Image (cartoon, rainbow, N blue to C red; front, side, top):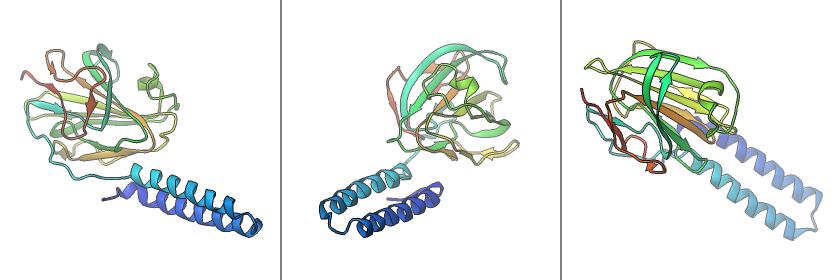
Length: 220
């Protein structure tokens, strides 16, 4: 299993903390062997959960210039027409994917093109499925202009547990479809905004696989 580079520091800190905790408890309570065993088992399970969160699977991505692919693993929780107020300032179709702590948390670019807009917004840490999380939580907004001129906007949104968003794009950068865009730690959400005439290929509650699942097919 390959681990994402964002996890190296967290995994090391968790390992040191658990080792010190187990050694400290054993030193303070040398006669309680049952407690030492229980703590060791709980520590191993906790460490495994931390490690699996940062897994980085190898995948064969979907590459199609007329399709918008899922930027992350998760569950489709919103498909609706909205007014996007930050960049387009007009109607778009929003597709939102909720990422639970057990999902892979790598983020991929949904289309290929030039990053025409990028902003980081500090904010709150409402639960990721809260209706206001898209506009009030810590988040990034990225817009990619495709070769045909169509622009796709997507947002990384921090949740109640996810308090660190990482991104690897900047304005003016050329990006490939399914190339790595960023990472969000410990539960979060990604919103994707597509043109109203795009054909939506997913349904509510569908599970998505980042870089593979097709969210929408563009008309132009």
